[in-house]
Image 1 (cartoon, helix red, strand yellow):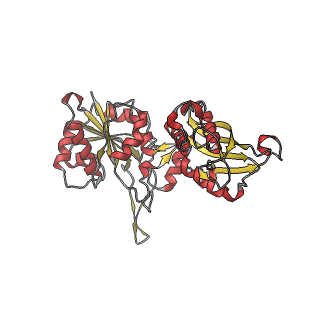
Image 2 (cartoon, helix red, strand yellow):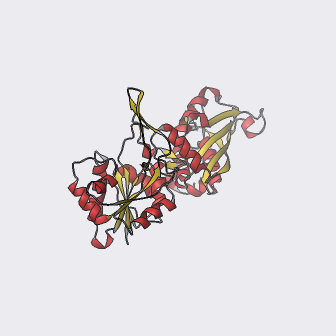
Image 3 (tube, helix red, strand yellow):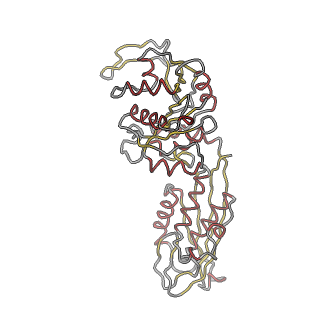
Length: 386
């Protein structure tokens, strides 16, 4: 039995983000977009995955998984039902030997899906044409009218539907084609409308659909027990050199001297890269960007830091905070500290409050005391999956 997954990521999620800045399925959770976690959870259980949403965004998010089961993303429709049908048509266009017998449909905004739920749905499809996970309603239900209780609704026999919802592929495709233009809040409703049985299997309270901002906090707590803290330290030194601009923390600092180096010699970003690579146990900056390679001559060090941050995300991790100390007599750093913090936060895609930049002197001692160069010490803490 070949099993395919349609993962839905075309929605805007207005209840989560009223400003509409970023769809909820692309918000970062534990160092990766929400939909990344959802797709990764299904890889051991299905033969192919058809993402539906913005193709360019989804390709960028899912390519680090490097799995041939993930098909090229396709554009979603205006409504959920349109997106599911687009996914079904894409699967039906595959060579016959690759078309699925069963298809699962899952919300890209449900990242904490368990293997047990996936298997329950698949097992139920051996007996029924469709199956969904659901949870019995435990709370008393009230119908509202003008902010006053209109009636109490009997909760007996009521369930809250979740995803993945599973279906036999051929009838599901036919039903979707016939229902084009209609409206259904979930796919099981289409089967119900034509009189086919839909099995209920046990869902999970932790199978949360990211809907409101507070849901993200709950998901962070549920998934954080899989993460371990890692500490990284970095230290770098560069000598002053005439005729070069001075770059520190990704910004240009006015000074009569720059720093000598193969790249732009941003000593702060180099130390910070080493700290991040150290937390990942992935060597130092030279291992990733060898000074012997001419393509990095006079390179912008911001590229190096972006790469280091991306390595954390690719490992499923999250940068918690940065603490960086610049060591020199001149130039004076205080006027530039805030801009430095802003630039580092921007490059790492973390909150400004997580970035600390300080400066100190060596009281005229040593090479920094003699104003021969600048040193930098960096520390970072990172959360990584076990």
